[in-house]
Length: 439
Figure 1 (cartoon, rainbow, N blue to C red):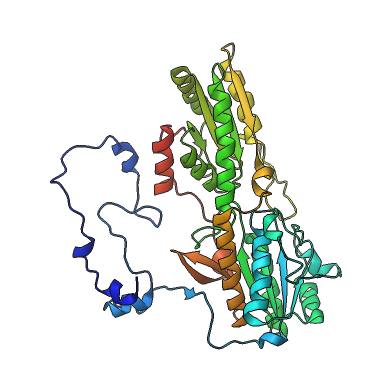
Figure 2: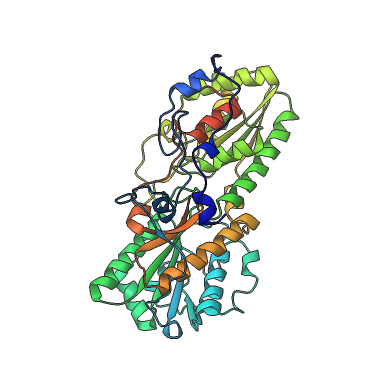
């Protein structure tokens, strides 16, 4: 649909026909009672705007002055860098995620084919490759041929902070003009430090981030790449757990999925499978005894049950600890192992079969599916356009279906989490039939 067609649509065109007045109370009243008007939930008296582009809204006569708006992604008529003089660098950081190789390949191909960039360097093992003096890989079209069909990253990855001054020294020594950083919030903070150090020195180096997190916890983007693939793999694990639980007397399938602070994989996999009876996520605290009581009733009623728990859920049930990993993240306790033990103890002498499935590394190490492969290519192209235009200290992402630019500070200033009062969690509660609260 073009702009002219959009401008002909009026509020009357969007009105929905009703059979008559609504007088019957809904059985979902308890669920609706706590819903709040947020970016994650639209109340029935509100409306969803048709126009998401400032220019179209302005043509419709809407006063858009002062309204917050993203810088759009895409190619620019004028570039900051002379393409044939550019040396680009690529680095992958943090944990593995489906689609890393797709993004690397997309960057290399687009830099060369669209802009004629002749030299692309791949730094090994995350930011370590900028600090340890190791020689980067020469990334040519032949070097990245077919890598999209492999899981992981051909560049290697690592966690942990590195001295940004040493990193900029390396970039200057190698003549890198644009550095593409593929990583999560910690990696993007590292990218910001590199951009700040380059700017302090007066070096004209663009630092462009491509947000990567299997947990989908980076804010202000529709989703992160690899999430759809992880979701599909997680749904397969739930299917297997359901088969095991259904086929045994008083069977309980317990599936632990990734999600340190955000339960998006657990929620979406639950909705995809329709076989889950309880979903536990970090955003919604639960009392173990209340949960176990509900679980036993469900098993007694239907003969089996499936429980999905995100790895970061229920951490309040463990002794406090200050242990962290190389990235400074708190080390998580095994909530799956604890739940398995407590389930066995709670059922006591009742015949019980518990199948515990933990597919974490299997989920994140597979190649991207077709959906994510498309998204990775689009992100790589958007990042290439941004870098060639001289934008820096920014990430590319998709917002309401459109490629946009975000400052790194915005992308790392908060975390995208499941809203306990939002539409997604309401969908999970409707699907599982679990109590609204287990606390």
